[in-house]
Length: 341
Image 1 (cartoon, one colour):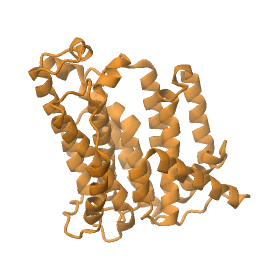
Image 2 (cartoon, helix red, strand yellow):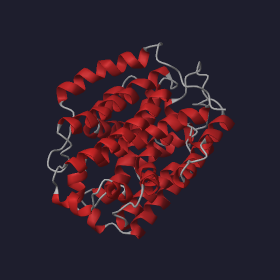
Image 3 (tube, rainbow, N blue to C red):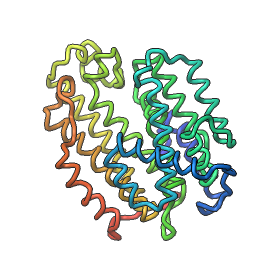
């Protein structure tokens, strides 16, 4: 694991410190769903807020939404609230008003985050998250860090090495795993350490974001962005000019094979932790994991042309993947995660 590796990169160690902090919070507070909720004067309004969060999740993350329906009602609503906050945060820099977003606007968004964590939500959707974080041992740091990722997108369009890219991937996606695991819960029969399960959740977020980056190379290049390690491009005899030219060459294929191998390594690490989650929470995680891995398969099937051809998983493949993910989620034969020392 990262914490035990003498060759751990600085960013990886920095992120793992956040993992340890979250794990310590869970162990300190004990079992889930026993924390006093923030008093709500209008329970009907709160339920309306959760319902709206579910509608947004169903609209923008259909497959994941289907998986959440197998969770307990309370956990399902909490995951919806977290999803909606993450989506709203992401749209600050990628949505229709992104051109008008400033660092000051992100500072205001972070202040809203601080307020909702102490029970002062700004609107009904914030109210759903405020209620969620009062019930589960969710630490505020991953939420702050996601906003930091949005700040990076305002000022940074190149990453000189994987150390820099890893930290960015953590900010915008690995954080989601650390937000979600406290809600999804760890199986009572699990022998794994809390931090090892959180580390697996982090790995899934990193893997998903690396996959997004590889899928969106052409789209990002059209916006003048290159989310690929500059030193690794150079190692394969490539540069930004090759990406902007958008030609699939043998050098590009070799580079892409190397990047896909890394993404799959993180997926493999994530797989180790899924079965440690509470049994009612596994299906949406398995579904996400399997579907995102198929995006990598699609890139390969497109002969690594991620300049002009967008890799995607067809509707039929998605439908086939759902029962496969469910079988994995309920299977007792999947290898369990070895506890960290």
